[in-house]
Length: 619
Image (cartoon, rainbow, N blue to C red; front, side, top):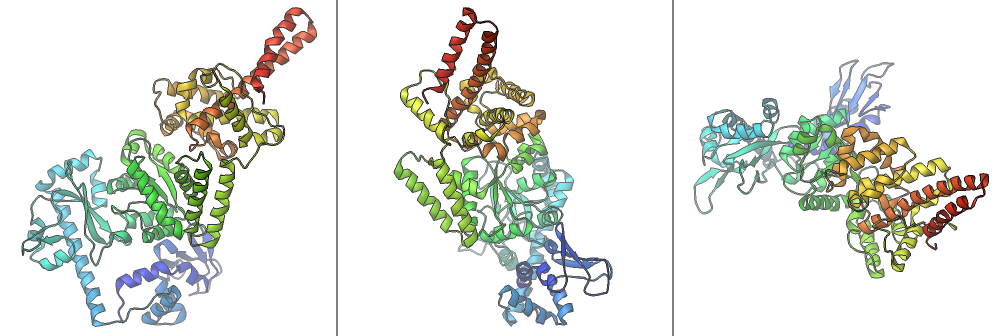
């Protein structure tokens, strides 16, 4: 009995090879592979390897090799149809009944595959010929060398309406070219024309690398900029990822997956060494695509442009993923700085900058929280609405254990946000009159807001348990984290920041570097400032300052804090430094007074005590 190739592909995807082999062989994980004693010959040292990502096993002792169906046939002494039927029961799949229609469909798909592959060869030939001169120049401007063009089988579709028909028409029927999505028939007419014209061609492969469709891009400002093949018996765009086969091979060596927005982004990342990059085909990620990504890595990184369209794409992907989250499997989200795409970022700042973007990817729960708290929550009704929105989102998660963890996580964050966590008894906020733009002319309402902020500031809770040196360093780290994540504050307090006295020479050097980076470019955003500092030798210091250990106790310094909270946090934290300075001066003055009880020394102490009292601000 013959089975449709698509059915067999899906069967291999659904059933874990390691799970089936593990029923007969004790397997030990080594990286992305499993090893054990070969079931086909006697051995004392394990030489039997299972490579799940590539769907095969191999024994280096006896040479046994095959896929999940072959293993089942050999170990169960079954025929091919029997092994397929047994695995289908494990997968919960219905075995298609062989019929004339099924045989014809399988034959048809093989024929369509041949037509698409022939078209790919034609497009490659056109790119290298005189017709492709402009397209070659375009690809050269994009930085694509000959090796890249050949590796991704890039091509060109000429302006002619029948170039493909003339090239393939003698060997492939016109009706087949239409069914494969390569030609179209004008409505109400017998006239046909090539589907792709005057476009650079990006062949689209299935998970095994077989060409099944194409994407075409214009070389000017014409619209639509991108054109994908229509859905065909071979190709459904919601089930395919561009760069799929290459990424699967890359993930077998290093478990990861990076999702970007377009063909050129994928190619740029592969050229830069990010070998697990893929892209959806002009639509939001589907559940099928997410499941396939999870076969490559448990937490794929979705990397989108920082513009509104990119953020909408991230929100759509989050919505698709939320219901199908399962223990150990989620998504992470990275945002490119400014107007950069992966290609331009790598060209301007190198692969290190791209790695930084991916390393800073946020978890799905963090992104969901940021989306839901982006609107004002300054009234009881709005806070209640936030709580309901979060609860509604959590209810979408089908897996009960993941749902419960999300519910508990958001309850805790709501308690923190809405003031549920209080500072311990005796904790006081200090807001001295240190001449800041933020502190000048403070009204009673301002002081009340700052008192509330100090009382609810989570990072102060750890202060009583810290030794003085650690506490001093932590305050310096918090102030730097506040500035790094919110550099806009420097436009208001740059002079004060320049005068802050740091005890740690390492952190003081970072403070000076921030000032030097900000001075010529006062409009630097947070991502660009961090990239600048890391490229100038401060990568380790920046990472420590922005570590979870610091930010877990200083929520106001995190990237998602609102501007008003940032200003209050600056005033609070900066004043702690001022009080430290005044305290040191008081101790010096007390020592002087103890040695010389003169009127002059006593008079010198009075302003210091008054400054300290002002710093307490009646709290």
